[in-house]
Length: 334
Image (cartoon, rainbow, N blue to C red; front, side, top):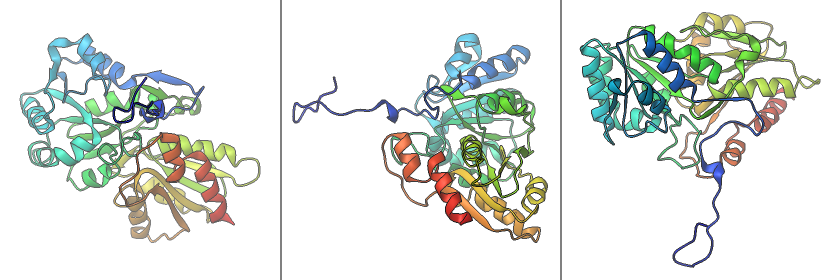
């Protein structure tokens, strides 16, 4: 039992504080990133794994067990991690560097910008706890990481929906030349897209489900939410289409503009990220440049420091749960 030392009384705790986006009973797959990286490394001797004391919490420990001679533990030093990853890339290796998204995007930004991106080095940065996938407050909630990374020239940014997609993304970004920032879902990761015969292509958006009333343009776990919303509203509330955009940069503007200009539908961008500088603003810019102005709304996190707490409560509070999204869509369609 956890006891408050000042009062001697039991302290209330909740396992919901642990970062998990899987609902009870949902199909999941354990550590898809770690297993996929091991598979790629079996075929390519140039793949190395590096982390800043977070191998267990980014699923890189699986790679470390399989390929200990190619695993490098850099300690709690994210700037060193990124600098060393750049050095490894200069020597012909393809490092996968893992940490939490807050530490890569905030603490190690200058090293990523100057050491890795400016020289267009072949470093793959895989970062756990993106957006609101932890209840531990602003110190661990990387709600602005995409906005930060989008500003780096030549940086490819991917935001996978589920385990099925992660397994396809890992070999794809390993084959891609240049730096990549990947938002990482780890642990027991939901399985969703395999039900739709989905195939990941770097730089491509995919229409997962069509619908006549609403088009949800989404990335990451919000595509899972969007598909849940579409099912929940299928009984007569609205016919909802879902366009999954796993590659945030470079953005598949052609597909987005084509789908958003079809049939006068309400266009809703759903992202696990602040309203500032993420997928929503990227899509809005693409539409305006193409001369398209559909009715447009965003489901996103507020431009604020978010609270700590249990994830289901926080997702409801900040409007990114399935229930909250359904309520928002009904209000916008009224």
